[in-house]
Length: 511
Image 1 (cartoon, rainbow, N blue to C red):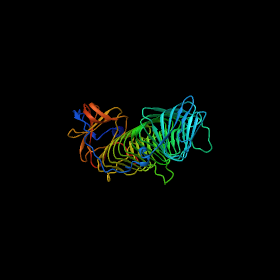
Image 2: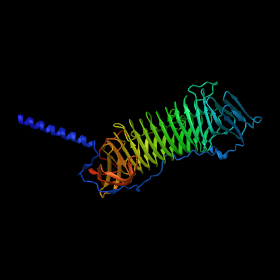
Image 3: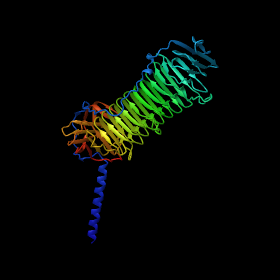
Image 4: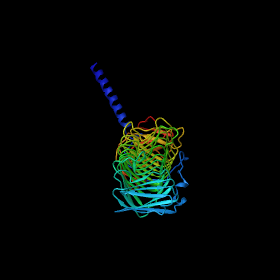
């Protein structure tokens, strides 16, 4: 009997060991066991691309009235700061009144076609403009610090063409506290009640000590120019209705959001953005009024976001990315949308230290582009779409994290595979049976689940997975190699794609 008991214990131990081994294997990138084969040299192929039918928003928010050349400004009023304030006003008798008190300049205008030009330096002054008509405002090397309010306080509800004069640098700094003026709204170093359209090739540096650096109660459009927010107590750029970019360079350091539209949309057609913030990088954030559509569309440009506590790019409605280069590194979600994310192109890297890399609270569709999405450990995901449709019809997707939403096989036309885990700073190579390169990826952080989809991945095909090795003469987009020669890796496993979506290992999230 003792012998039978011992045999029973041995059997139980064997079962426990096997179960333990099985669980460990689920945490590895596995298919069948690897045979330790060393990878031969193979060329990394970036010529194989795919693109499905574009979906989502493609609008550019074009508006002919925002083009400076379409307006005429026939008379110029100049204000030059220095030991005294020098004012040249040809329209004194024609509808423009300019007053100055202790360095504070107030302009009141009922005239049309007026241009204003500011220059010089004041350490305790300001400019306030009331205008019944649209106007042009040129910053020609002006440096304004106001200790008790905005540096530029544009109280006109009309369009202002703010021109940064070529080869000049201007600065605007507001006070940490404001002196109230009746019920006038003012909450930024550069505040405008009306549309604020930037152009010119000069530079503007702003410091928002009270709240925002730039604020418009209408919209902000950047056509050209170099804008730097060195600090802001709240947002770098804050608008009510919209933010649109057609070019220029915008650099923002802020304690709140980088760019926030309170009750409207964001369209980025072009431009370079470097945003370092505590909260959200770029956000269209209104979500309590069904008449407002806070969509966000990126048609191009180069966008870099670093957020220590918030999300990278967020739309409370639809987020559409059609092109551009986007790198976001955040504590919260890298990309987030309230109803839908469409990715039709571009190069996208989303890295979250504590949440999802890419998170749609509705559906998620990818038709093109190169995407690397890095989520945190379980239950956070590389790609997350909350039990909604996840369609893949093109592009290259690499998503890693604690889990992933599974692509929807019935609507996807490009194959994908869900694999188990990998180790940080290790090269991963997926090769077809005839040693053709399918994926070469330098793993940025240890993970337990990978989602991979590519036009190189075919159904009913066996692939080998190699780890380690090296890449010679290669270039990569945040770990995703697009050229070079891979060699020296050790085969760790194989897998066979059995359908449009093949699950080999890892964990499916709620998507």
